[in-house]
Length: 214
Image 1 (cartoon, rainbow, N blue to C red):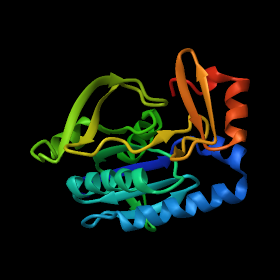
Image 2 (cartoon, helix red, strand yellow):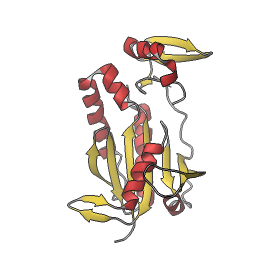
Image 3 (cartoon, rainbow, N blue to C red):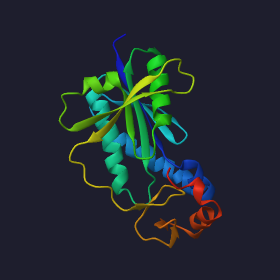
């Protein structure tokens, strides 16, 4: 089978969002995320499945799959009251069964996505080489990393949209949602943090180290 590009994109801080804002708000946020993924699809990239707070994408064109992910990030930037995203991509061979995909490339895309920090799009070096000539994307090699249950270190590359506008708004460090009108502001170690709700502020006061530097 020809190589395909796989991507896993998820909502950063979804567990905290659920705990602070409740199941109903979390479910609504997930539904908005799935809709965002569908309207961001480029080329033949498609959603393979939903996995809780994440979506799995696949496409025969690496460039189109990367475009889809970057478009999702851009859409999330301007979506009111929406968490930040993180993503991992990998290009390689796979086996398809009943509309789902299996194999090392799928596993590596998932592991790279889990390794990504909030706001990051990471990919394997094969994926990066496929889009090397695309002036719309800047690739920054991050070196080799050790991924969970992967025998050998994997070269990782960070992908950035060239000419992308600066990040909009401030991010609540607890639930990772963008804050346009802060309900509470707290100073910690000389840095001011803004929160979307009293509940998020209370969680931060109880344990700032759990949320700073994520």
